[in-house]
Length: 120
Length: 111
Image (cartoon, rainbow over all chains, first blue to last red):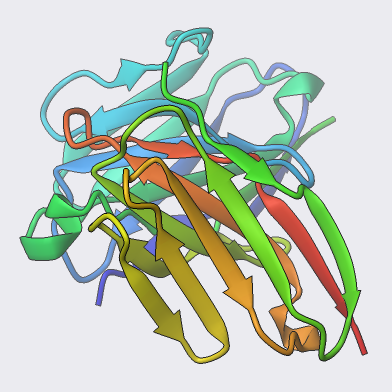
């Protein structure tokens, strides 16, 4: 149980284009998903909290107009990197909270496999 | 602002050695998770501790939550090359549901 998928697993794009990354909870419904960014050999940096049916909450310093988040259903959240630049190249990881039982109580998050974005 | 200080950040040891990773904070957390991440993959949850003083064991891994729920440790006995990876501690906020991550510990176990 508690499986989260991401698509695509890697993407290469040209500078100035937009890229959409999908995050799906496969065997549970997730009212809340999180988007993280990770640089090589570093920890995860929370970018935003995605809430189903409402606007995402962005962390300080994260541009909401550049990183568009949509949580249209209980199993899908998308992150769109708009007008991508080389400095946006990174490993993007999503996670989801299972709202039932212990996972919710214990703040457990289940992570997707990540998406490697390379902007040329 | 809640912060988690994780140490050491890098550790390279020989197979069979023991090691301990520490996660410390000045803040109290309602829960603390330990994750393991391999290159190019997402973190995988190893354990969650919620009670002060709690000790949990997962084969050769022993996790402890401090009495005051401000710190935690991960001890690996007789490390094996398969233990190589990035270990992350993360404290949970019951108010926001967010996780506060430590800096991570990159462990390399040489055969």
